[in-house]
Length: 121
Image (cartoon, rainbow, N blue to C red; front, side):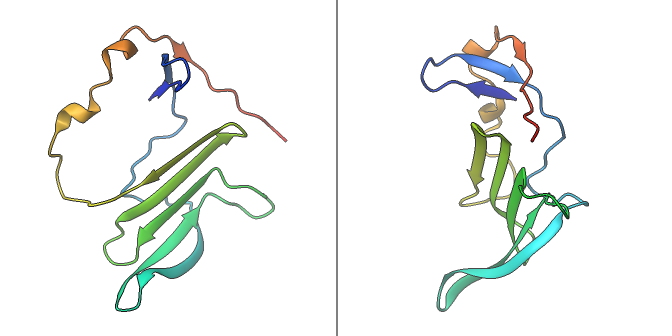
């Protein structure tokens, strides 16, 4: 994964600790709640899942998916107190219309790997 510092515009490579598939709720997830988004007559039922375990206070991942067909609506990852990634999924279509979106910017070709520091409480 690549991370771009918005202030300096520097690009660095960071390792993901786990493979991530936004179209798949991880098997060890905890069901949080089920609710409707939208307005009367135009609402979608969704479920919220997380990696929260008993006796833990904070999740590092929360995902919201449609009840029908399990389409992703939103995913939030928290690495530490200063790194949170939130993704909203809009206008989903099957297939990849432009595979070039997966090509990192040229500035990332010379980026050096950088380990993210995990904070423990």
